Amino acid sequence: MSRDELGPIVARLLEAAIGSKTIREGYSKALGALTINFSFLHFHVEVLSWDIFGVDHSTGRILTKDLPLKQLIAKFRSCMNHRTISDKDRKDIARLLRKIEEVTERRNELMHDLWLIHDGKPAFCYKRRGGGGKVPAPSISDINAFNRSVQGLTVELINFKDNASIRFPSFVGTGHPLEEIGEFRES
Image 1 (tube, rainbow, N blue to C red):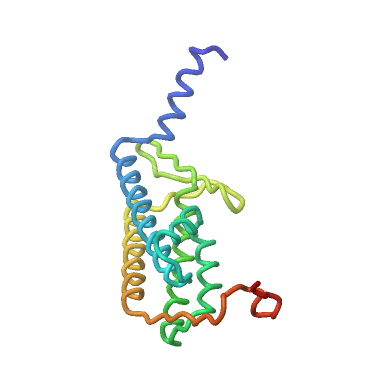
Image 2: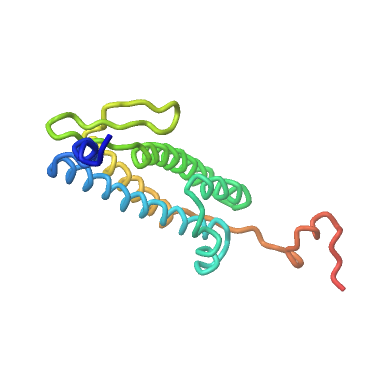
């Protein structure tokens, strides 16, 4: 095929990927808002985790800056077992963490799908995970509703942090892990 023959094919592929301006802008705005809202949720999980880890915010940023949210939640849960938290607060944070994991999975699906928008036709996605395949794209209003749920979850997490009572165990001795099993001796 010559370069002249490829030109119209490439133009059609680009049109399919880009789509009409108004539809593309609507999806771009909704997915962009999701990115912003999810980032804010992730940040607040990090801030609460610094409290659970028992570290200052400077140290916390070092420990959590590159952690995907799923890994952060796993570490959060592990540390939570070593904190004094009321049964009510423990149930509330467990519920919130489950909801955050569900939101994370849905967000990852939306952000990692291949979005194609043809002018005058319904938008669709190719699922790149879990077997792939072409599926109808969620509507812009569905994505906006999901955004509102992410925002609501962030507010719930902030309220939890503001109202929960989390106490840390007191350390006796050096706090060295081998001290617990009698293998650590200071010289």
